[in-house]
Length: 77
Image (tube, rainbow, N blue to C red; front, side):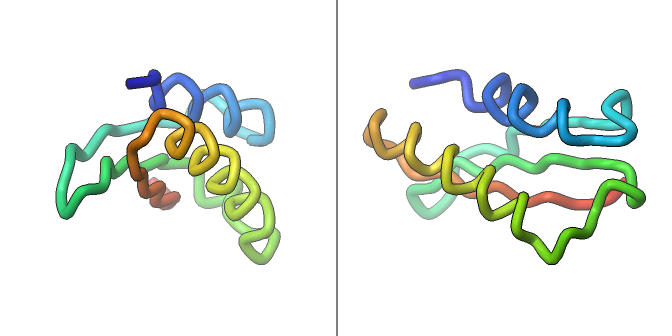
């Protein structure tokens, strides 16, 4: 299985005003999904979710290629 934590970090970090605040957590597998949580500075949330959805689309494409399902939650710290 691919390194989804690294992919998430590499996709999100360059887009943040406060990249040092980024924390990516692997929450494990449940209901056939691998769940990850990206915690960012509250100042970095926004944009009506368009950037978050684009990041999820890339992540889902990689997961599909690997034959797994993933979820990505993006939250403020």
